[in-house]
Structures are given as C-alpha cells and as structure tokens.
Picture 1 (cartoon, rainbow, N blue to C red):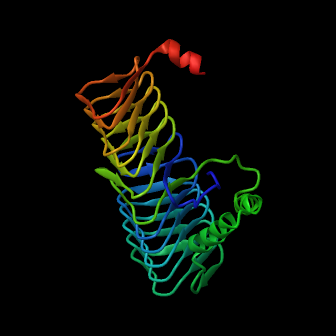
Picture 2: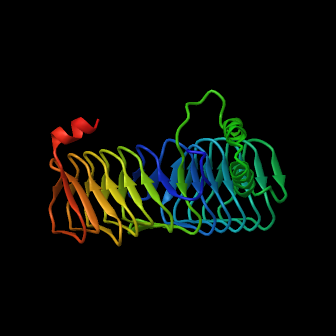
Picture 3: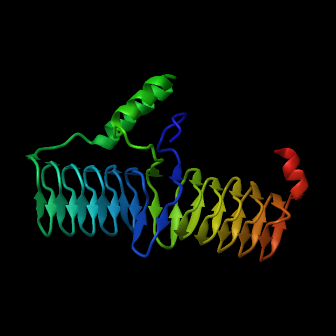
Length: 285
C-alpha cells in the first residue's frame, strides 16, 4: 500500500483477487472502512473492519480478525489466530478462534463460540480506527519514515508483503455493483463480478471484469483485460491498452485506444480520439 495518502481514501483491489460465487478472496489483508456493506463473505490473511460494517457471508481470516462496534456478520467467523470484537457485534453463525478472543459488551453470537486461547470480555480498542488515525496523522505531518516503520511493525515479521484489499468508508460491494465515492484501482489477474462505480478507475492487466465501468473522471483498461460491459466516464478520458477488449459501448470525453484493443460496441467521444500504433508504443518505451 502506498503511504503517500490516507490508506482509506481509495478502493484498492490487489493482484489476483477473485469474487467467487459467495466470497471475496485475496492473499493479503482485507481492510473495510466504517459504514460499509459487503454482501460477499471474505477470505484473507487479516480481516479488519471499522464500525457498522455489514458482511453478507462468512469471514475466514488466516491470521487475526478485528471487528469494530456494531458490525454484523451473516455467517460464521473462522479465525486462525486472535479475534477482537467490539461491543454490539452480531454474528449470525459460529465464532471459531484458534488463538485469544478479546470481546466487548453485548456481543451476539447466535450459534456459540470457541477459543483455544485466553478469553477477555471487555470493550477492545477499536483497532482499525486507532491504527489509521495514527497513520494518517504521521502522513499529514510528513513523517513518511515513521509511517512506514509503524506499518512494518504491525505486519507479520518474516512474511512477504502483500498489498491489502481496501474498501473505503461508506462503500457498497455486491455481486451487482462495487460503489465507492473515491478512486478505484484494480490490480493484475483479478476476476470480479459486478459493475464498478467510482470517482476514477484504473484497471490492471489480464483482468476479467463481469460488469461495466463508470466514473466521473478518467478510466484506464490494462493490457489483456476483458470488460464484459460498457465503459463510461462523465468528463474524463478513457485509455484502452493493447490486447484489451470491451464487450460493450465506450462513452467519454477523450479516448486513447491501442490498435490492438477491441471494442465490440459503439464508441462515442466528445473530444479527442487518439489511436496508438504498436510502433508508437515501442518508441514511447
């Protein structure tokens, strides 16, 4: 994750993320800002959620799981290490924790819980909020080295760094649509279901997106990516790289498209249209 800005200011989908039938799966951490709705279950290394986040399925955390106050999980919560639940968290299934359990007041676990380590019943510190407040303050003060040291200290020692899946505050994620009022970035080799709605959208290479892309600002589609829907921007530029395919219409202000790209539908650009040839791309490199 880049530490040059507030980490929850954008939707960030890391390389290799998949949206399966019922679950959102990634190799790294899952970080969800407060007041968000995720209609999938989630599977990741650490799963961290802010206040009043709703999950529509199971949570499977390989390491820790931290849920802030008033979170609601429709299914089971399976945790490989420690779990931290704020007050009034609701879990519709079972809670299974391999390590310690730190649990707040009025937590409702419908099908019971089991923890192999210590169980402490109190109000845990809202870890997500505390972590990002400290990190954001360091960044605002220009203390990038200190911010990097904090992030490294909180990570698992000896593990290879993997970018987290970050869902910003107030977002809605479902099989129908990913809706965020912030920029969105999709890594390489992802397979996602749902229309993406964001301030701007940057899609990496070799992705398969079963939905449309719509943004107020620029949209870029990387090499070899397939978009099974329209690509629309209100006032920005659309850039379509070599080998990319849009199985729908393209509507934008300006358009830059590689000659090796394919658009199956209608192209409407109100401003400039630029065709990039293969020899031009090589010269630019």
